[in-house]
Image 1 (cartoon, rainbow, N blue to C red):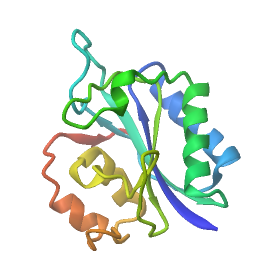
Image 2 (cartoon, helix red, strand yellow; image 1 turned 90 degrees about the vertical axis):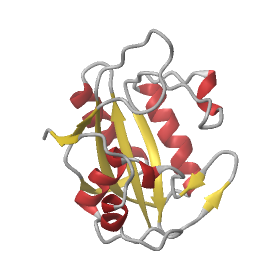
Image 3 (cartoon, one colour; image 1 turned 180 degrees about the horizontal axis):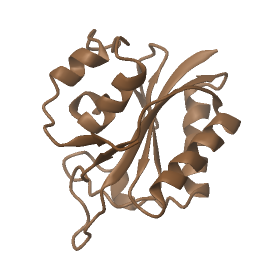
Image 4 (cartoon, helix red, strand yellow; image 1 turned 30 degrees about the horizontal axis):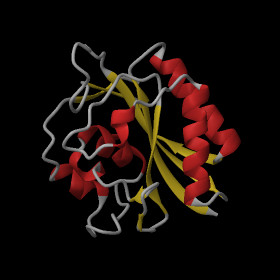
Length: 173
């Protein structure tokens, strides 16, 4: 049994219902949801497609006990996203510098899988930019503030206190 930490979020449609649907499907298909964070509302992060005025995101973190491998968990998460209406654009595979983000009904990111460090074209764990994003760290600190990042050797609380992202991350539930 492995401990998998996920961040789920979205900024289209009935955001709260989509978070609940995603949580239910994760519980059914990936593993037992052990802990849920509060739901946080945050402004869109990154560069969005020209002309797009994205709505604020709702995000939450989950701790899941799973028997799936990291690769199986990723494939299942992507299938859940698609089932809930996520359409991926071609720009999402680009380097961070050129990436253009788009609004989405749901996004499921694998953040940690036990203490594994994985770097393949399909999957990077821990999530490579999680330590730079308040909207990831704040919900994770709700459920695992003392979890130690396997690369930076700092707790999530320490990473949050040092996070360069100054954007607002407001608890809304």
